Image (cartoon, rainbow, N blue to C red; front, side, top):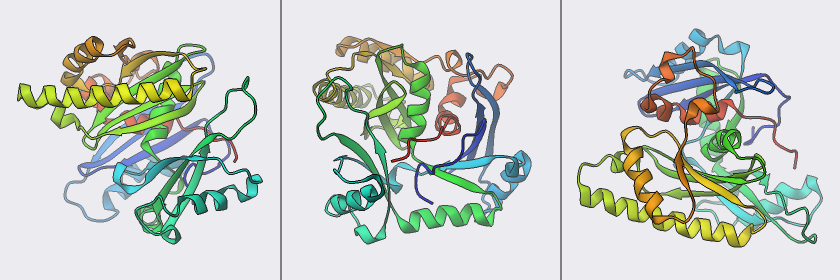
Amino acid sequence: MGFFSKAKSHDAWLAICVGVDGLRAASVTRVTDARPVVSVCLFQPASGAAGSAPLERLGKQLHAARYDCTTLLNSGQYQLLAVDAPNVPPDELKTAVRWRLKDMLDFHIDDATIDVLDIPQDKNAPTRGHTMFAVAARNQVISDRQALFDAAKVRLRAIDIPEMAQRNISALAEPPGRGLAMLAFDDEGGLLTITYAGELYLARRIDVSLAQLNDGDVEQRNGNYDRITLELQRSLDHFDRQYHYITLAKLVLAPMGEAAAPLLAYLTANLYVPVESLALASVLDFDGLPELQSEQAQQQFFLALGGALRHEETQL
C-alpha cells in the first residue's frame, strides 16, 4: 500500500488517527450543495493497553468493517518534498522520482515507500517543467502501521499525511477563484498549507507546538509569535513568487482554543494578508454531535475530520 491509495469513490471514509494518548476517529459524508456531515467522532483512550487492543475495541464499537478506513502518519514518520516533475511517461514517474530523492532523504532510498502528488500548472502559461510533491516514509513505518490495523481486524484502504487532511478542510473554506492559507497547531507543531481550487500548492512545518502557544510566560510566547510570523512571511513571499497567478484571499487559523485570540491579534498586526479564525461549523455540519461543540475538541479532531474528507486523488 502506498500513500494516497487510489480507491473507488465512496460516500464516507472512516479516518483513525493514532496518538500518544489514544485514537481519534471521524467519518464525514459529502453532501451535494451542502456542508459535509460529520457522522462519527470518537476518542478511544490508550488506557495503558498495549498493541492493537484499543484499535480493535474502537473498530468493534464503530463497526469499522462497514467503512473503508484511512489513517494518518505522524509528522516525524515521513518527509514531504517538492521536486521538479520528471519528463517521463506516467508509468515511469515514481521510479524517476525515487531516483531524484535518493540524495534528499535522511535514510536510504531502498528503505523508502514513495508516492507523488501533482501541483497543477498555470493553464495560461507556456508548457514547461513544473513542481510536484513527493512523500517518502520508511518501509518499516508503513508495514508497522499496516500490521497494527491487521492485528486489530480493521481493514485499512489508505495511508495519508496531515498536509492532505488539512488540504481537505481548507478546500471547503476557499473563496471562489482565490487561494487560501491555513495555519493549524497541535502537540507536534504548526502546519501551514496553501490551497487553490481544492489542490495543495504549499506546505510548511513550523517548529512551535500548541503547548508553547499556551505558555504563560509572556516573553516566551511573544518569541514564538515572532518565529511563526517570520516563517509565514517567508512562505507567503515564496508563494507569491512561485504562483503569481493565484490571488491569496486570506490566512485562516484552524481551531486552537484559548491560544487563538492573542495569536490572531499578533498576526493581524504583522502580516500583509487578512487573518481570520476558521469557524469549523461554517464548513462542516456537526450539529448533532456534542463532542465537537468546543474549540478544544475541534482542534483535537481536526486532522481526523480532514482525513475523513479524503477523496480520490488524480492518477499520476
